[in-house]
Image (cartoon, rainbow, N blue to C red; front, side):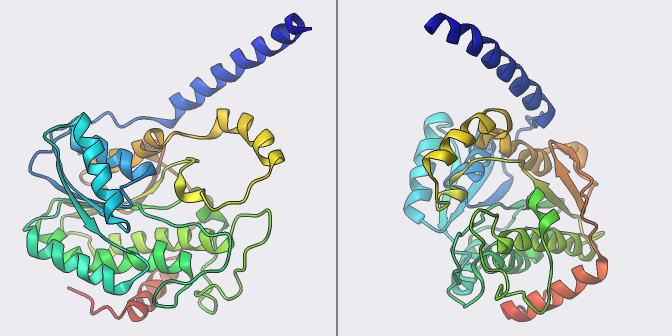
Length: 323
């Protein structure tokens, strides 16, 4: 019986492994190994998952990396871990709670006070909730953190990014943006209640908002020396989904699928690194990337929606826009 099972399972495992390697090859890798000494990077949500891998790779390239995290102790622990790999890494741990406008403003003020230049801002942090939740300022959690938080942060740092040009802003979205909707009568998610067994629509909507924000930002920064990149990292299993409820059936069905489709955090970090560091992209701005190449999304972004969302976001965050 054991021999029969081995004969059956061995070819399945070999085929699955081959398919996995083929998929990994198609995902692409950041090939740039440029020395980034003297360049200042801010990575939000860099104490775990994709953000942690991005910070680690930047540190290896001698960049100065600001670990912008909600949990300051976790950020400090990450810095210690990275220094085991890159002993001379220039890492600064700073508290940033994207669910709090006060925290965002305090963080930006500290960065502007202590850093004369900011070369790359990577808006990586994100939340996914299975239940209805609000930020400290009363916004629906996904819209408030994933979109409004990064919208405010970027605008508060935008003048310094311009002064530091050539500089870059990387905005992390998701392929799930294609399922998102921007409803100006429902931005705070009153109608976007989670449905059991389905992806939270609020999350999808916030990822679409990320893409619209980056598109409008690219238009407004044209000719300034600041390049904007929109990134879909791929299907990466990280702590983002730590609150998703599971059952024994979920694990049985999910594991074989994960073998073929899920990326490791390091694999998910590759397109972020590509857009943040590759010199060949220096003159590009406003494009969507996936697998270290331009991605043509099924979702067509409408300029008028991007402009309106910007203006509404400006009002909601109390932002006095910089020129």
